[in-house]
Length: 413
View: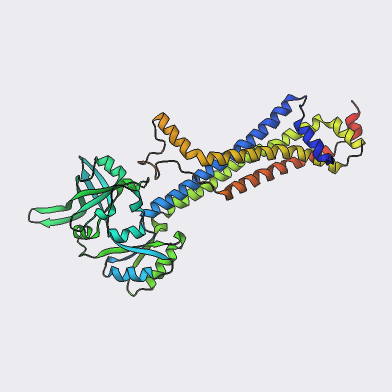
């Protein structure tokens, strides 16, 4: 069977047991280093992708993509809602009344973001209905002063369905008895969990009850929009406001949560570059391996040259040998990385259960678990970069081998 000489000899050199065990050790460590570098890079980038995806789906599933507001209140939110939904990029719109305050219950106090919504409208623009663990959004009825709280808040205030809580607003009310804070008793109608910090401070009440508490005269503070593309939010919000006569204030998620996603994107880029240096170091360890192999094989090179092997063929022999180390290390690392990225979330959950310790506390982090989202584009880029650096590392040692002088090499043999 025909076998190219360069490929045949290169593979024989790779598989052969060397007299110099140090060279074998360096070859093995180069392969293992490349394998671990590629695997860790794929896993870490998958975790970063997972955080990015979960924040988009969960946090931006709860907070508005874009908001149209009036100066203080929106006089005719029905008109704004109707005009907004006519825009091609707007999937749905819903009115809201929003304010900040405190809630007291179970002997504890917690700051909240109070959102007055219409349940039938809110279902179209929020993921809240899909993350209810007790009760349902439809339990909010006008005049009943019901409230839906997050899982963390319910745990902190020791709340259950049917419990009473007191909502205190920062506005004061002047009465014959003096200046008193504005407060109202609410009944817990439901508990949700989206696995983010919103579980600790986000609450929902019926818009009519919120309007009564905040004295908006039955009017909404604004209309929130759900868009088909998150990254169109600034442009779409401006276009919707321009379609309506009057003065409106527009905002979008890039102003409220944009810094968080930019930080994740920057961290992913910087971590990717730092870990790529680990892959580069492992790949260029192949240089030292092949340089020592060339020194060890000078007599063999000289014999091949005397038998008619050209310098180009000698170069190809050692390129093949270095490429085998690089290809095996990169492909094994890619396989381990893909398997690790697909199972890292369940492994961490199992480890937390075994140790009885939660690594990502929802009180500290935006997400209370370790997400992972494997993107094949990242896998192909990392694998391609590993292979390219491995092949590049073989060029200099192979060139050194091709420059060996047969007479000088065989003089002391």
